[in-house]
Image (tube, rainbow, N blue to C red):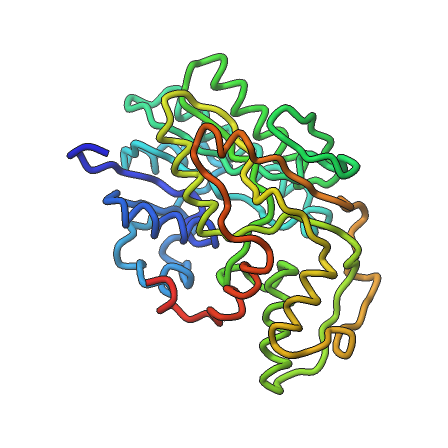
Length: 326
């Protein structure tokens, strides 16, 4: 990394990925800035949980407001920008499609435009999503697989990736997208089904609850460990040439298996505790999500060490204990 200290700006630093990335960058000697829409009023609970809040400089930024984006960049003068902001829930995107598309697509466009005209060029990482691929009929998706988005969230993410590609090719800026498959940690909010399951297992095992309500468990995903995925983000900006990469474990499992293993690790049988309701279903959903992360292994030297069973064990073990991350 050389003797000069690098500066990084993480847009959306308060989320799971933003927090874990901030921790990684601080460990690598970076000066780290992080944005929130209202930095003065935000709790930054995740940063506090992992013990790095005092080490991150936080500033307010609204990704949909170009002036706000430009002013934030002018203030911190970053060498690297990680755009992780925007509405993150696929399910919620069906209820809030306009907010979802604006926060993701317009936010990405503003960052790209600022990168194009800023006096100090910076390298840009954009967090894409495996949701862009839609249903591939079980075929493992790679960087060449066409996008077939089936949710407002996926449509927005696909548009954002195309914008990154366009700016990279048209203006020669160093911008790339990580097409991220599902990745989890104890920093996930409970609106995500994996954390909902883990939290329910812990509550049921402790006698605080006896029931978990879910929607459709007949889906399959590639689940990885989030601390490994932020390392892949960082590695993408250390390359000579900007490229997009699929980031995944390469292993796909059903949600029912995730549920079964989670309960078994606590000595429980999920069938005694789980109830189902159609109200939690989505208008459309991907049946099987499968990934081919071979390009990341070849060019970044990155492969996922943690697979689904390891992820479940780590999430159960951590139990929101900040000491685990120190």
